Every structure is written in structure tokens, then in C-alpha cells.
Length: 186
Image (cartoon, rainbow, N blue to C red; front, side, top):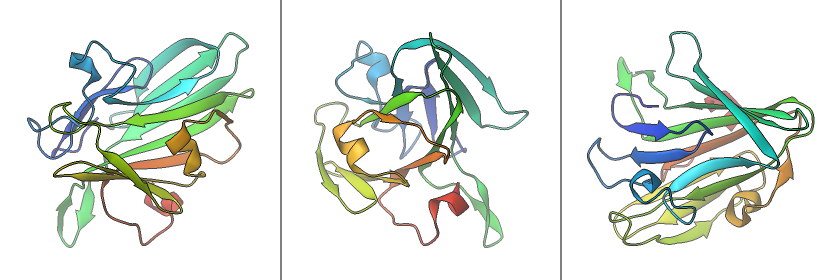
């Protein structure tokens, strides 16, 4: 997943395992790919309770990656990942953002969202600050922001929840607030 300014590697279960947001060869914010696939730090994923299988594909000729996760009870959730790129003020705008949409396709899937970035080549996890609809991950030199349309406590505490009818929208990127609703942005 990328937009020409940065790239991210997503594994078969929808986990961001590698991503350098500031430059292609910069300090990786997600790095569990080279950290023995750590379950402690360096990733961003959606954990489906009773996970059984996954399927991935790109939407048409786009750069939108679709990951479907299913349970043994046939509950299915879809994850759409992309990095935005669009024309703004007569030039191509490629913000340092990963947009993730999670929606229920079938049944009653329960998920938790885990976002655990690292800083300075995995030497520190930094610290968090929160707002009403965002959490900031602060390192020694960079700060990343997660903005979402769901209760932010679910991200901070990694609390499992039932995916409802409305898609869950999560934007991970530069520490900038939004002037529009997330449904208009995504």
C-alpha cells in the first residue's frame, strides 16, 4: 500500500508489518517484519476473534488492498487499506496517511484494533496522548495521529467490539486534524 511518497507492507491477515512513513528508507513506524514478527510492537492490525481464514486482493486496477477475514462460524469482516493520492491546488497531493475502512460483510464479527508504532528504529515505543476522537503516538522526533469514527478508547485499550452496520474508519498519519468528517475524507 502506498502513494508514491511512502510504502507499507501488509501481510495476508491485514497486519501492517513494515512502513516507513516519512521516506521509503526512513525510520520504520511499523517494523515487526524484521523484529521476529513481534506481537509486542511495530505493527497495526485488526484481530478477529475466532479467526479461521483470510483472503486478499486489490480492487480492480487500484491501489486499494482488500483483506477479508473469516471465522469458523462464517462471520466475515472486510478491511480496505489505501494511502490517499489526489489533485489539490493543481498538483498531486500525497499525504503521509494510511486509511483503513473495516466493515462487516456477514454474521457478527468481533474485532479489536491494535496500533503499536515504534520510533528510532525500534529503540522506543514513545508515549500516547489522546483527544476526543484521536490518539497521538509521540516519539522523540515524530508524532503520528490516529483519528477514527469509533470511540478512541477501543484503540487505546485494544478492546474487542462487535462490528456494526456503519464502517469503522481509521486514519493513521501525520499529526494533523481533519476539517471534514471522516466519512467524507475516506
